Image 1 (cartoon, rainbow, N blue to C red):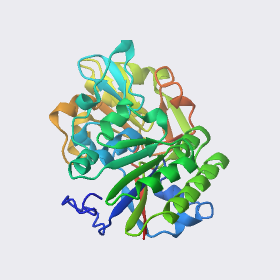
Image 2 (tube, one colour; image 1 turned 45 degrees about the vertical axis):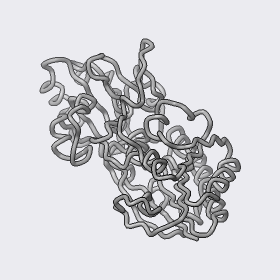
Image 3 (tube, rainbow, N blue to C red; image 1 turned 90 degrees about the vertical axis):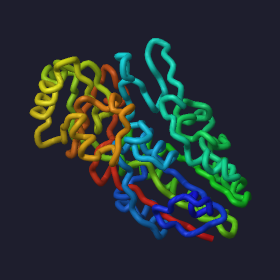
Length: 352
């Protein structure tokens, strides 16, 4: 998108030039999920576009950082939701930006790569990010959106108005975020009544955003991941074979990072493979890296964040951990894995 604005960046998606670009980022709007309900999203379903792959794990913190840096997870280091901080014995929640015992994590130390927004600002374009005020100044925002002018807006009406105001600039680079579709999917399941209600809101918001674009604009609608509804849950904390030798259980239910005690790596890998045979891919850290799960390159400084064992369901299984991840264990919808329902996201386009 920076290339389309004429900033001389590599144009990996071959996007045509535009004076103004708006990215409508819909949390949880998987391409397969959208295709399953064209009647609820007639505007989005009418738009030209293509399907992109979110990357692994298919989760918000990882995808937002990929979008915010132009790098793959192995380079930017946000390789999961709950990650071990090497040398501390603690898990770090990269979404809530929380550590136990009052420990503090500097966003620029955890994610030091320059963002695309910083590059835009350096080139003379003021990038604007429109989202609820509760996210302004959070650790995650500072890690992945450094360089933006944050424009807080709570309601759909407010967000549409803020976008149209920001798009008056020329050139313009505006991102607007909507998260309630993902929340509905987690709590009630994608495809259910509440999820469909949210999808209709997203569709109407996209239509309104498009209708207010000035000439020479491009609106791109995309997402960070899709979702599956769990038909089976296994409590990893309640199965002795899955706890023996385990120091920390990180990641999330569809992309578990398992950190082991010294000398227990082989034992844990074998136990998890046996338990989740025919249900999940279970590999060692080395195998995940060599297979390119986190992209073609993983920086040495990020290796310790990846679990010694990584477990990724390919059935509709959720590997829960109610003691350390209490709310997540109650979900209906999950994401994180490498299935097409979770990985495939739309890139839809409106041009004026």
